[in-house]
Structure formats: C-alpha cells, structure tokens
Image 1 (cartoon, rainbow over the protein chains, first blue to last red):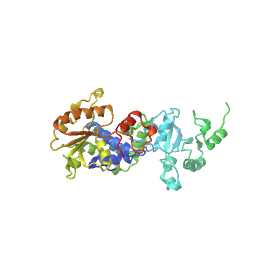
Image 2 (cartoon, rainbow over the protein chains, first blue to last red; image 1 turned 45 degrees about the vertical axis):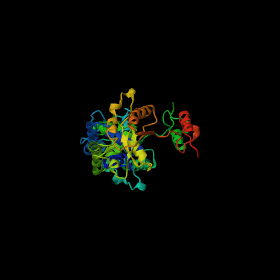
Image 3 (tube, one colour; image 1 turned 60 degrees about the horizontal axis):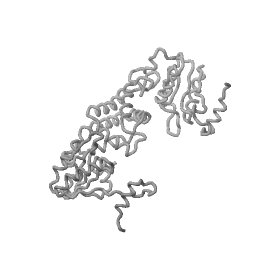
Image 4 (cartoon, rainbow over the protein chains, first blue to last red; image 1 turned 120 degrees about the vertical axis):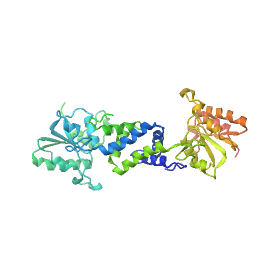
Amino acid sequence: MSLGYDVAALEELINQFERMPGIGKKSAQRMAFYVLDMDKEDAKKFANAISNAHESIHQCQICCNLTEDEVCSICKNEARDKSLVCVVEDPRDVIAIERTHEFSGTYHVLHGAISPMSGVGPDQLTIKQLLARLDGVSEVIMATNPTVEGEATAMYISRLLKPLGIRVTRLAYGVPVGADLEYADEVTLTRAMEGRREI
Amino acid sequence: MSLGYDVAALEELINQFERMPGIGKKSAQRMAFYVLDMDKEDAKKFANAISNAHESIHQCQICCNLTEDEVCSICKNEARDKSLVCVVEDPRDVIAIERTHEFSGTYHVLHGAISPMSGVGPDQLTIKQLLARLDGVSEVIMATNPTVEGEATAMYISRLLKPLGIRVTRLAYGVPVGADLEYADEVTLTRAMEGRREI
C-alpha cells in the first residue's frame, strides 16, 4: 500500500504483514506501527523468531509432524502407544487432537489431502513414509478432514492398508457437542442418525 | 499457547504474532504456519523487514514524522507550502490526510496527545520542536483527534501560538460524508448544526 509519503522500510514491513492470511491493509498497518513502537530488543526477538522457526523446524523422521529434532517429542515418548497411529492432514490437527488429552497413540501427518483439482496426488503426501512405519502397528485411525478430499484420502490409504491386515478406522461423524440441532446440516444429521448408539 | 507437543521455535513464533494488536490465538497460529510454509528466501525477507524497519526509521528533524532520512520527503518537497503546518497526533494521521490529495502544506507530528490520565504531559510530545520551527509559518491547523485529549492538546498549543501572531485553526466538526444522519450522535449533530454554511 502507499503511505502517501516515502518510507520504504515501513512500506515493506506493511506489505509483509499484508501477505499473511486473514490480514488486510488496516491490520497490516497497525501491526507494522506496533513493531516500530517495540523496543529494539523485542523487535530483534521477533525477527529472530521468524528466521529461527523457518530454519530449525522440519519434519519428524517417523511421523512427519513438525519438530526441531530428528524425531518429535510424541514419537520419542515411551508412554505413547506405537501400535495405534492417527493419520491427519496437517500439524494443526495434531494440536487439536492433543488438546483433548484423550489420545495416547501416535500420529502420522500427511501434509495435505489428495485433491486432483489442486494437482495433489498421493505422491505429494507422506503416504510412502506411513507405509514404511507399519511394523508393529495394529490400528490406523483415519482422522483426515470430513471433506471430499479428506474422505478420498482416507479411502485411498485404507485400500493400501487393509490387505496388510491392519485395522483401519475413521473418526465418527455426528452433531458437534453443544451445537443446536436446528442449525446442523442435513448430511451431518443423516450421519448422526446412522451412527446412533444405545444409551 | 501450548501446542500439546514440544516445538519451542514454533511456540515462540506464535507467541510473537499473538502480541500484535488485534491478533488472537487462532490468527497467530495461522500466521506462524504461513511463515513455515514460506520458502526460505521469503522468510528471510520478512525477518529483515522487521529488523530494518526498526533500525532505519526515526523521526524527521523538522516535523517529527517517520522517515529513513534526516528530513522526511514531505519537508524536503519544494512544492509544499512551508508557511502552513498541520499538527497531528500520529504518523497514521499524516497517511490519512495525504490520502485526500488536497493538502499542500507540511505537518508536525506530536506522537501523542496531552493526557493527564495516562501521564502524558506536554513535555512528552514534540511541542518544543514545533515552537522551534515557527519561523515563516503563518497558519497552524490543529488536526488532533476529536477526543477530549485531542481537544485539550489543540487548546494548549493554540494558547502558546496565538501570542506569537500565528493564525491557529481547527478541523471542522460535522457529520461524516456518506453517513446516515439517523446514526450520528448528538454531539456531532449539534456541532454540524453550529457549523452550518449557506449553500
């Protein structure tokens, strides 16, 4: 954006913030001015956080989740059940499931989903790495997103795993806890009816 | 925020974004992952934009607006009317007024407004620098915010300038162009009535 006066370093900073997802011109400007108001030490820390994160974070050799080490803290953890692998699309999904504190198995992060529309095929995902770590694995939970792509990916992987004698399961569909039935869409409601349990 | 798994560099980056004004946990997380998805060159540029902006931007020696040089591009511009000075609270106000393309004078940026509540007195603002540049100035437009603090600051400065024989003016109050009268507050409407002009 143009400031109306010439301060290249400030415009560059605003442009950088404006590239972020969900950040418009006004927010970017506010963030840039916030950075200018920081003391020198804090600005240095912020800049370093960006370079550091980018340089030191890579994929875990086992589950392909993000880590600063060769193997991530979850794969390293002796208390985790290595025979149970939860397959997710994205590192953020690991964060979401970990937040439940209910899952004690391990993960496998695909880094995407099969999507012919966006030109993403099985080879762009970490399916090869998943197939290479099946020794001792008894169940794989497909926790890809409840979308067309996530569904297709779950189907594709389950077809590869089932012949190997591994149990493949899928997250349950249903109405979200605390939601209002009135606002649930028909497909979700149908799935919730199909998946009903005795109480 | 805790990620549920241990990637210190990622947590640090999320925390840095979360400190920004108007950015919550979710946005900060999305931005941090966006940075991780950048290629190396782009992340370097982003980090540099932060350090550069912070190191190279300071106040113009004349008007105290932000600049990378000793004197800002507006003060340097020969076409600008140096006898007309528009006093604003913040560099962002300069951007807003420049956007109108209607003002050909120069600015003076106070970097705040007098606010006894927040412990900001006249000495914390750039009033001294304003008084030092009055040679050849015939009019000072007080364009501080239409708030209690902005108003008090405008009054304070006008009392200093008037004895020196300088014309001091204030931005007009009134209803915003394009707004609906129905939603204008009483004070603004009263001011708009008081300031009515013949057509």
